[in-house]
Image 1 (cartoon, rainbow, N blue to C red):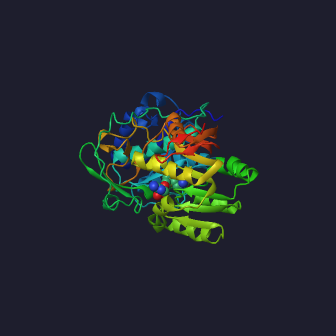
Image 2: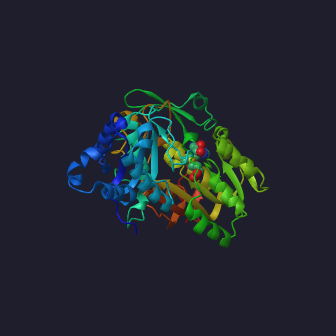
Image 3: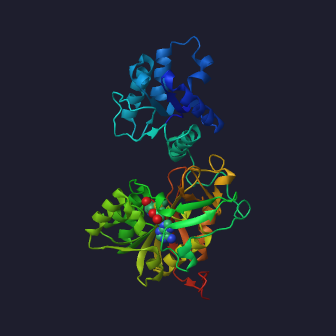
Length: 413
Ligand SMILES: C[S@@+](CC[C@H](N)C(=O)[O-])C[C@H]1O[C@@H](n2cnc3c(N)ncnc32)[C@H](O)[C@@H]1O
């Protein structure tokens, strides 16, 4: 097990950047992030030989290092020492360790130009602190943890905090659900927020549980046709195609406007077993499948009834004893961390207050998820969660369950 770090994040900067860095440190402290910022360490550093002390902080006592890249940073002996220590650690890590924030366009020796960075000219202190806190939440599995089954820290009580007017866009008002990925929703404070559900798709490797557990299981069970509902940038679709399954991806066309997703679509189209349906076509298709994926989709759907509609539609397209892999996250963006009242919409929230187009998030307890699936005749057969912020569950259709018109499952007597 990794040793728990003393700091969540250590800030490395030249003095010229202090006017930017100080408010970020304050924002982090307010969020209860354990931050190494020189002004908070006067007592700890007093009397110590600073070179080994700082080397230790930037090499091994922090979970992340944020480097504020500036002209003076490149020439100052102390910052160069901090960067060398951080780079030595980064070389050992199999994840991002140094998070650059650019004050200007200076190039730092050893820090690749292709590393993703935040530009101080585009984000205020609060927003940078949000990004850092989000990184910490996302990688919370790096901390020692006994927890396998994740639950939200702050369970949301539907209806209690969010008695809001939901105003879907024109397409929806005309009665055609899911022709477009956009939702216009009013927050409690009356602001009209545009949610684009396709903006939630990440470019990550396929979920490990799929590779290590689910694909072998599908093979053993003789699965041929899999439906990947809310396929995003097709990371799971491609993994399944490569493993020899026929895969139908359900996704909005708008999602493939982005380069990486368009590239993935090009790759998928080379497999004869690949097909694609828009979400509205998915609702109408009579095609049947042997297994389904619903990975990181329910959390970003802002309308509760539509979540149910997705699960119900999947159930109708699967036969008896078919598997469904469900994945979600929780405690990544927990309410106490980010979402102010003004960011709450529907029964969830959006994150970045200053953006025009938002991604919606709603976390579910595993009990809630089980209830949603049980309602239409899925039973949970396994939890494949490995990380604290992760919920990966395998559901199976109950062989005898019959779906009523409302989607409620009843067992024939
Ligand atoms: C967070 S992404 C997850 C993508 C993919 N499953 C993965 O794990 O990488 C969620 C995706 O669900 C899609 N989505 C949202 N609402 C949907 C709906 N009603 N039907 C199908 N897909 C939907 C979004 O467009 C988005 O690409």
